[in-house]
Length: 372
Image (cartoon, rainbow, N blue to C red):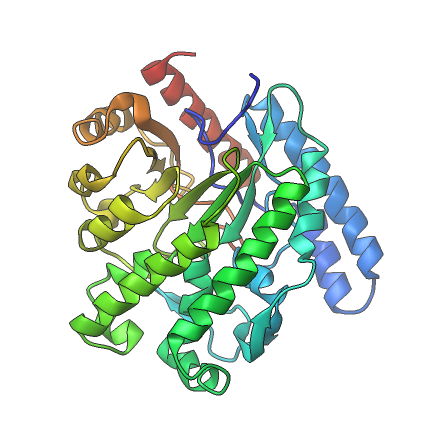
């Protein structure tokens, strides 16, 4: 098991349900009842227990479950200079429920010194063994850009950046610094989590981005450009993959639509090694778009949902894997849940026991299809 690299035949996206003791500690910290050091001690303990469970489940990738974050993406942005946040009053519109996560916006030019996620990674890196490798999940540069150019943020962003191209340059440059620091800390597997392309495929995309079809095409190119710029010049032994979904908050979603309209951009031209893709229900469309996956890139099929505790039928999942193999060879296909179990602290609507049952199912199906 030397030179372990993601993805693995059975894999997971990254986030896990927060244990009650961690939720309690974070609530107490926010109320000023415990110190940052006391909170970190609880985080450390919970992460150690989580990694033990990941290994016991037979997985070859380990993560910290995103236990040190409130959200999968915003905490990372808060680690940059020029980014501020405040408690939201309206939240973000998800299907049937608003995601009450902090409003996040620019307060100046974007830059970064030593990003706190580098220290987070060092903790998980130390837990690797001969059978496991640590993966660092961060929001894609495109996600960072989207956060600042959506209609609700654009007027504020223009106070600091006259045009989007300047913002693209700054974000990509600073991401390169973070990626270099993670590499120096021993990281060899990075996952860029990206809902921006998932928003572009939605039938309401023009309204969501406040533009017309021509404008949408320009945004699509900017999202591709910023991701590719950020990973340009990476070391050869650093694996960078991406995960694309349509929102994952408290078992609900933000957008819908097949990958067809972004396939020639995302699948053909993004310079990543693998795509972790949401395919757990009809909102993601069919597999035809996978024909655009270029070169020897790998595809991790997110066929097991984290939004429901109901276990999928093995035979149906296996049939879907072989259906996808019509477009990408079976030896370049992998299996995982469609997203994390707790993209935000609130988590999805299932129990920890049900979470591990899902991962057990992923492994069983993968071993049946590809062998042990």
